[in-house]
Image (cartoon, rainbow, N blue to C red):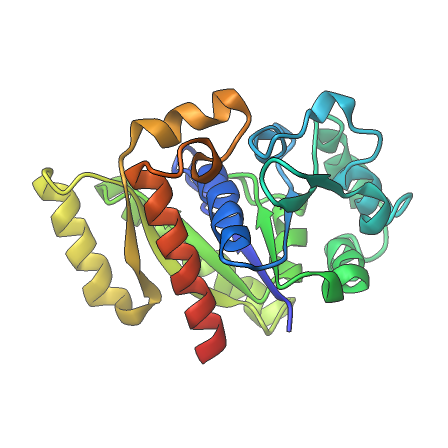
Length: 256
């Protein structure tokens, strides 16, 4: 069965895109068939997967407006080993256009259903705001992977996200749940980060992934080369952590 996961957090700058592309590359590395859907008009997940967003003929924008299917719009990125449904600036206009349309929050769900058999995992990179784009992602998904830094403000943002997921679960998508919280950019030398990490584990229990992604320069450098860190420097600590995370994700899904 295909697993469809949103990578979401209403706080910006927490590493959602880094998590999406590196998890995708890690899953591809352990033999999974993966599609990444970029729902952010900035198109960072597209560029970070080795795909030039400026050269795309068809994007997720065309899929949402139903002028193209995912099968027509997806791109196979040989460099990274997974498929990409890309985004560019056009997507910002979809917000306004979707408001008038029927099934405006379920369009992505229908499009994914048509290609679901081609993939083991579909990962959706959501924008930081709660918009119609994010809603399309949440209505399509079985669960949400929440990357977060172990800082005080991150806990504030997390409570907002949990409330949003509860509302979508109650009103639009009864399948939706939090799959797990991923601690990213973690520096064990900082006492506050250790304290927040312990608070997370105390409050969320096994919803906190065992894998921790360390703060890592190679992961930060990789996007400027248009690659996930897992492909850019497989020997780096950050890359190895993401491959571990991919293995943990596969185990969780098989155990569920």
